[in-house]
Length: 620
Image (cartoon, rainbow, N blue to C red):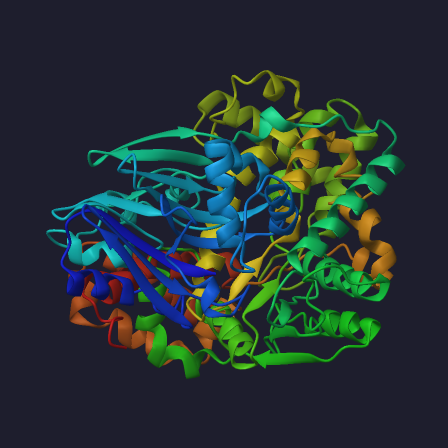
């Protein structure tokens, strides 16, 4: 929705304005400051709800005690507003921001448990002279902080804090350690020294320049009782997902969907169509028929045919985006500057997709993220169900067969489709080896002492770690940057906290079932979408066709890159190993997708250093 910034302390107004302006891409529709001695709050606005001046931030409550700068959306704000109005609160705007202020005045920190949404907000209490910070349950909206010369500072992105630091220095140990790319986002550690990440599901107070925070949300504290019959579980998930989409369709501007043609994004837009057919509710957007499909013609990663099947079924038009990486090379430094962090694949297709979304006049999308992590969509996760199957050969072979059927494509880039029996044998052998050496042990849950954790099966434990500590936190960060770099807000119906809690209360057999991954999701939404999409087994995912690009349109650019003097002198990469990895992909006819992914992973710190540390991306 927006970009936020603030300082508890004394800061020059021009310096504060410069810090806030680094977030202009997050809020292209307006900006503002609120100050009193000892505090400055700043806000860049992306107008989604109440487009009038009444929705402008920073915002103060009616009594003038509380003042807020807020990034995100509270989807159930209308229901909360009605409850507060019955208690005597009056509202001047039609925004969810004002509802947060009133809810905080009424319930204090407890208001967080009433919110269904995504957020990072700061509220200054003028009576107590203290700042309250809060971040949503899963960290969908970012929040960083630093202890600086002007005082305690916070912002939606690290770059807004750079001017307040003695210098912008990389956290070299973290940047060079490619094994931690999916692990650091759920920690306080950042790629820039002197900056910390405010944890997801936490809140805290800043008093006398010092932060004390606590965890206000733990998913395991909120697991519901689920029906024992699978059919009833399916019906419950369907009800939850429809309501989640309904809430997230509340908007005063048109909404769209980034459609891949896979199960999750197709389920999202198909459920939106179902809601539109069955009647709208208060503040529900009716202009939703905007699908945007990234295409990669001639590569194994092109899913445009599946996406077209969905839009044809729904009777809506789609915008097909032919992603040409060569046309984006001039903006690569800028992309890395906007992205700020490191990842295993190029930002180009994602940045270009949401750029097209914005160019079409769309500022909000409902996308399909989080279903894989919650319900077992990744093969590297759902093979953990083999531990739950134990010595039941039939169930074990069914799980491995599910893995085989989900193989992306029968392509040299992805290797031959494995035989189920052979893969099962390899899995158990590797499991024994891991148990002996512990060399490849996966991360341990920070909630492993919780009573509910001890009752969970192995697959669900693995998914819990993916959701809270590794894969999903990383992807949430990525898509926040990709979309907000273009002034677009992503809403994620699958990550409604009610659905997440439901998912972790389910047994593994509701997720991997009858030869299908995410079985309960498929059965819940199949009635709204084409059957061939709902029950399609192969999984590709939204990725760059990196091997094809490196051999083709990016070849000369990459060869020139690895021959540059500053490339060889960079302290953030192993220049020799990186150059060899790049040349292997370019020159070897046997190069696979994982080879391209590895080469890009090794290259990324160099591009990041140019753009972020050396500042090449600022003016690009």
